[in-house]
Length: 312
Image (tube, rainbow, N blue to C red; front, top):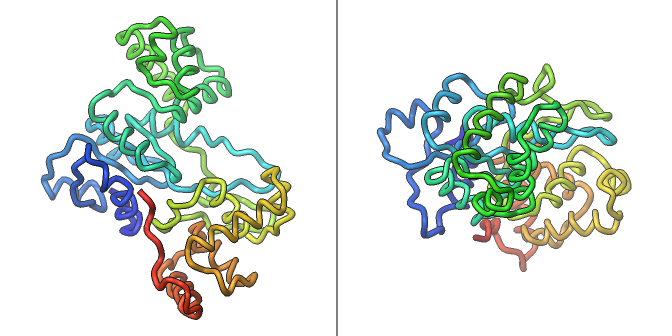
């Protein structure tokens, strides 16, 4: 469930064709979920970076949940972001699984199944986030858990990682519980955010993404990162310098993304900007932007009249 209807249906679309799952109709919030009286084994929550209410935290600690974290934007050029904080905060608050906006379908489904069946399994990005958190905050972690986290961060399954580090399932569960408590005491259960809810950029305040179109999930995280920079007004040279890639690669990412959306004829700077704003979520009216993009596509006879669906 998530507050935005397009987001809810985008998440459902990612999972719909996995034969291991049976999906229920998405709902907008906890109140609607309780009213519906649905029976389920796990729940997917689409949460913004503004944190978690006590009601949501209580729910996540009682029900197997996977938290879907939307694109959080990028820091100002030259700055570094504590990206691990959002992952760790979700886990500390009770989420059994956490996935990002660029998650692949199979990995997403695996996270949901793991949440329902294996509460102490970890995903590589969670393991990496926890290792970064313990390093940045000097939290103590046992040698066995550090070894397990290190192996999971490399892509190994939790069971195989525990075997490699010589720890039992009971010890692993106890170590995780101690780490969760330590993270909560250190204040890592609340994502850090600026006072007005927006990130500061060196060219003014950029609108924090709030409406990410489901079609954006078909693009890689690097391509979306380039488009977020472009939407904020940075040119090819600045983006290349910030991401440590060539200007040619930046341009290729922008144009190839437009190709996938059928925008092959009119690719002026204004159209590129419009497209980047739509994909990055730096807007509040996706319906208006989509209408304009559809008009651009329809002006070229050889172009499809609809946006492509996310490949599953």
